[in-house]
Image (tube, rainbow, N blue to C red; front, side, top):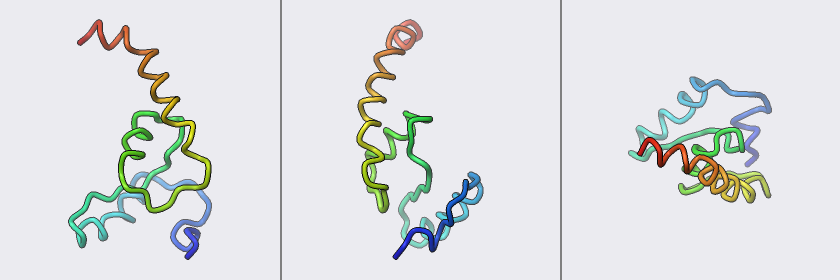
Amino acid sequence: MSTSAFFPPRERSSLELAEFTAEPSFETGYVIDAGLVDGMDLVYANEALGGMRLFVREGKTTALRPMYLRFCEDRKEVVDAYG
């Protein structure tokens, strides 16, 4: 089955993604999240990569973990100052 059956190629709003996942979440009792995993939100990407993924475009996630680790290193001094 093609994912285009669910999502024709265009940007989705947060409300559309929440509506898409609401019924399966309720029916299964699992937290289901539909979102774009990319380098624009590395914290979200890192969390999402730790879960079960139903669909991932080939080769799109390989650089995200190293990017997240670099992000953590870059902000360590600030986090330590407030921690």
